[in-house]
Image (tube, rainbow, N blue to C red; front, side, top):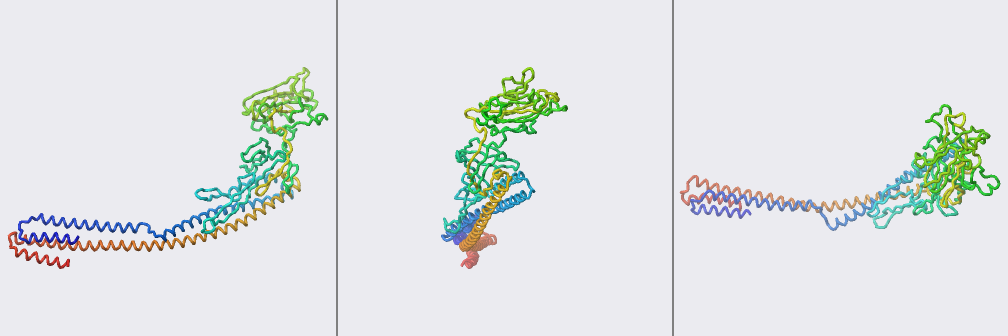
Amino acid sequence: MQLDEFNRTSSLVGALTGGVTSIERALLNIGSLAKNQAASSVQKIMASRIDKALAKLSSEPNTALSDQLKRNQSLLVSRKSGVNEALEVVSKSLAQINDIRNHIDYLRKRLTFLENGDLTAAETAEEWDNIIRRVKISSRAAGGIIKEGNVFTPKNLINTEFRDTFKTQNIYAPYTNEVGDLHRIDGVYLGTDYYITEDVSGDFWNSDTNNLEFESQTGTLTEYSDYATPVKTGQYESVATLRVNTYDDTTGQINFTLGGYSQRMSDTEPNNDLANAQFMARQSFKTTPASEIAAGNGNSDLGDQTLPWTSIAGNISNTGASTAATQDYDWFKFDLQAGEVLIFDVDYASGVEAVALGGDDFDPWLDVYDHTGTNRVAFNDDSPSSQGGGGSGRTASGKEFDSYIAYTAPADGFYYVRMKAYNYANHTTDGAGNYVINTSITPTASSTFLGGGDIDGIVTGGGLSLLDAWIYKNFETQASINQAKDALDAAEALVLNTESSFLHDRATLESRASIYGSQIDGITKEIRALMEEVEDEARAELLARQLEYTIAQFDFTLLSARSNTLVQSILISQDASGYGKSIQENTARVGITLNQSQSLWG
């Protein structure tokens, strides 16, 4: 590039010194333009070389060795991540195990208080069921997330979602760098759950006590014919009303009674409105064996003693202060199936029978409502003499003032019966008084769950095997208290063994995580050293290009300066001597300038 500029300048000087005295100054300007174009070309070419060097420096340097190291590093990072995920799940399990152990200690102390008389059996039973609820919550809270392949899987080592087998999860954490070399951590169910397999039908009974949200709630024992679906049979009862007859904690054999409600009961206040209606469970409707009826031990106040029945003794308690808004009502709630006939027969409220029994000759009124409690579907004041059984009171005119209703349920659901005084204002005569209600259900061919009955089965405990308080007979005997103590001892042993195993697993995982961390750091240093070595080569190339450019700029600047000096000398010579000077004089002056320039280039 410098030689091209030199040749152009030499040609220009030759033209001027060859005797051409009429050359235009514009020709000199053209020569100056050629010089500027040459300078721009040099800058573009050298800038391109520098850009390539910069691109090479900024690109990630790779070699076969660095690529292999990066692959190994990626594998180690992935395996360390797997170890850390397993560590998180194990640590959460250990935290909840500590809470569960505290719950067990608390229950053991409460049993001691019970034995010392500082707690009642009922108080102990309530606390027992609420603690096993908390144990279940603790076991659920031990969950974490493990990445298995490209799928994130919830893991919990001390809980189960399989209530028929109590199967637990396990974790496979990386152990060494070898794919497939894993550390297995087995789960142990530490919740509280159980089921009862019925001897006769093979159906299953499950309690939901430990799954309830609030401690004020009472559990329900529900029957299932199949766990896989699951399919409810419709048979159920509150654990508060169940009664255990026998329970062998060594074999799991149990006999308990459904229909723990008494067949004869009392009016339970407050039941003055729909919200507090006294519930008449289907299990309380029991039949009287034919032999008992024949022996005179049935219920002669029933029109048909072969029907499932129950009876209620109560009172309508209006006073002189009662008003239409404050008069006494007694509400009752029934669970009926379609086609069943509910017979609601009020006895011993009015007439000579009521007086003979110390009654107040009370005149009742009945209203029947559907499930909404607002739509009245039937009512009765005074019944004909042909209805009802014994105990139906009569006046001298032969009219019965004891109310009676037989209502056929059109669909499955709850129905309500409300009883009041015909005239609450007559509280001193027939506006208040005692009564007995004999209630029967005429079943259909498909009616189910009337009467309850005894169930024989086998208890299969899951997790800590802490069972509902009712199984320990509500802690009313020392034998039951001892059974509960044995259950706590077994639970504590399982918790301590599991805790010890998980502590060992956590130590192993922490060790593996530390080893993986060291290996990752070592590979990272090797990769960094290789990268720096390759980067140094790229930096050297960049510096060389930058230096080459600097030198080229210097050379060209120097050449341009000398070329300008040559041109200026010619112009000055012309200006000073005119265009008519002799060729010899001009030649001498130009020769001096050329010699000066040539000495610089050479």
